Length: 197
Image (cartoon, rainbow, N blue to C red; front, top):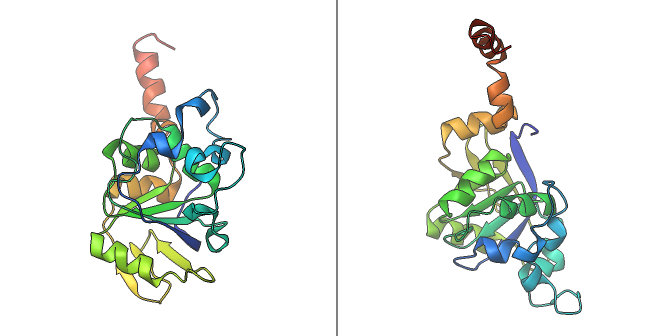
């Protein structure tokens, strides 16, 4: 995965609690074996009507939110089933960071494994961030993983906590395979010593 030090870009607001992974990526789209191509199906039932046309009332269909790389969401985002496709769909759609008061544990883990930031902040802080977004013309925001700081649309800096092991992996672009390959010499030595190689 690519190293991610900072995300700066347009921000979208999805102020809904308990958005589960079945809503993020419905089950009928889980037939692919690749990690790509899921973005077009993100929030499919909310985003599109039965004819495949955009629903004007759905938040992510707002012109001000198009091309957003940061998503502000409600509490318990990514709850429900353990499908890793939910994180893949969000990233494939263009999101590099999701900020919410809380996350489903498995979703948060899956996000970290693919290099997408899932940042938990107190509910009142997420609400302040949402209120700082210009709903008429859109807003930009920055998430600095190195400094652990969010720069709100109004310029205010908001510090955040982030698991250090996950942070290190994302900063250096290390997925689980890359982490394992850091010990390639030790693995080869073990295999040689045990007649495996």
